Length: 187
Image (cartoon, rainbow, N blue to C red; front, top):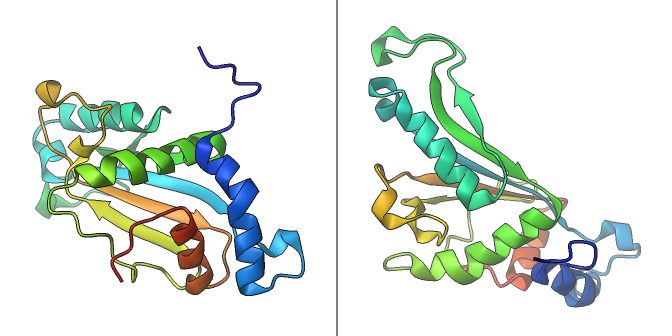
């Protein structure tokens, strides 16, 4: 059992010890509060048409996302009815979870060091998926790359959205911050 009073995630310690100083030197910040940091990581699984046919699919996605994140995932529901898609208002359609603090650093560490190397034909992630305000969004085609998911017990292979929100003002600052975390950009 970990002593949570003294335990610090590896990437959080790296950020405090080396990344902050490197970012301050690289961009010439005058104040330590100007140095960009990770704000949150949002994970999302959308079930789509499968959830319309079988309501248990959204529950399965929620359980898988809870296992990956280490934190209970919320079920996402339809905001309004759409007859063409056979969707009713408040029908469960997926799951999402927002990670902050130590869990956020732990997830990012697992994503970079364990999950991404397990992606088939992986050549790095796009360096162009920034939103203009320092946030990065990426997608995974299958959630099976995470070791928390037991391959034999999976009934459906889900795609997954991952949004990394930073306090950066520009995309260049955010990309530099994520590069310091060893994010494998291909461009």
